[in-house]
Amino acid sequence: MFATSTEHNERPASTVVVVAKRLATTDEERREMCRIALAAVASGVLDEFTTDWRTLNDKRFPFPADVLTELAADAMGLAGVTRSEPVSLDDFAARYLPEYVFGGNTAHQKMRAALNLVVGVHAGVIADYFGVAGWWQRQDLSWFAFVTLVLLVRVAAERTGQPVADVCAELATARGIVE
Image (spheres, rainbow, N blue to C red):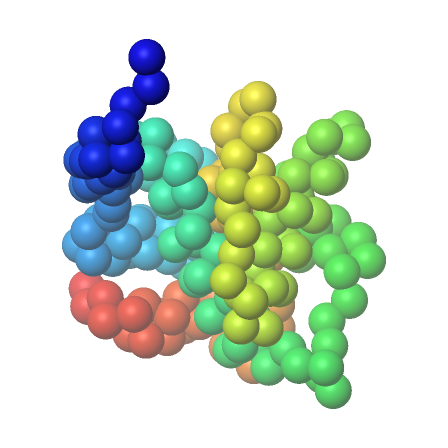
């Protein structure tokens, strides 16, 4: 009725390998996601991202949200956000992304969840994507991670006095992305 310990140990190991291979993202896929996201942010045409990133979003959660979260954390670093040089999250989206209105409590909570992931990664905490958003019925963490990237690139541009496109170029260079 129950598998012996040998059978039990062998079968899950092969399943784990198959699942891990299916879920793993390549360095090239991660670089391509960075390139697509930064190009959209730099151009200011944010709707392009929602079209372009879908080719890489093939149900390998948390990809591409993890890549976008890491990029946003890098932007937070470029902005010089530290405990002694904080950024206020009060009305954060309204200040740095006025062209987009977040409606409803769910959108606000998802935005806050994405921001909290970025803050954690910036602080050196390993993000728990499944704990934060793995249960969401509509899996749109990638969209909210992208919005967080946009916000933090704009914060970095404001704090450094650079144009948004230059901040994006700096992030791309740091990631080894050359146009």
